[in-house]
Length: 223
Ligand code: DX5
Ligand code: ZN
Image (cartoon, rainbow, N blue to C red; front, side, top):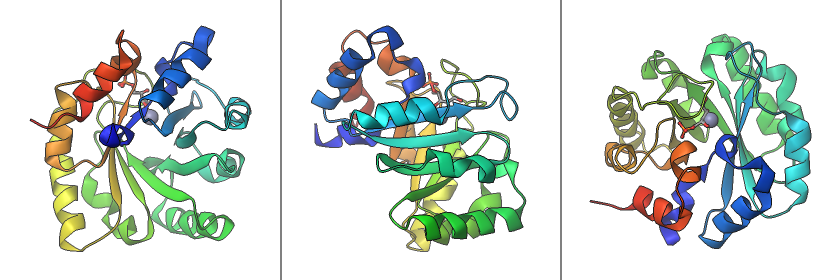
């Protein structure tokens, strides 16, 4: 139960016709953060949900939200995704220049010092590209599928990225947490944790399981 908070269910795969039931069930098994995927139809081919739905959900007061912005121009949108229920906001490294990205980190810190700031990279982006940001951010979200859709197959090469990043973070005693998103199931989850991930996002595997308690236990098990 204690380790269950290492799993962040991705709302994208929840049953919107019975959302309260899905969320209540997750709360009972020790989940405290929900992963909220924002897709703009430009940075990724798909469109999901925006800040209106996030604000509605936040009124529920049950969870903290981990916002994943898969949008071009994150600096234009980010302010709309920060509220008291939001624990962290992550944008994509591929959408900004280095100068813009350093500036955005500073700006968001000034707005809200408690917020976790994250940078995500797509599967084809080298992990070394984001090393210079690590001392100033809280989360690196490694995409282990091409962003845009739930239910895709885990890209094996992601494990090497996680290992390299874990080593780099530990050697420098940095505080940045490694999140992995895409294709997480009972097999890939333990591979990711072994490679050094701190938290995993799980969508279709978790919500597609009849018994979510058992599914989360399988995701956090160590073998
Ligand atoms: C994909 C999203 C993911 C997605 C994960 O672009 O960022 O969060 O919902 O879904 P699964 O776990 O089904 O790959
Ligand atoms: Zn995501």
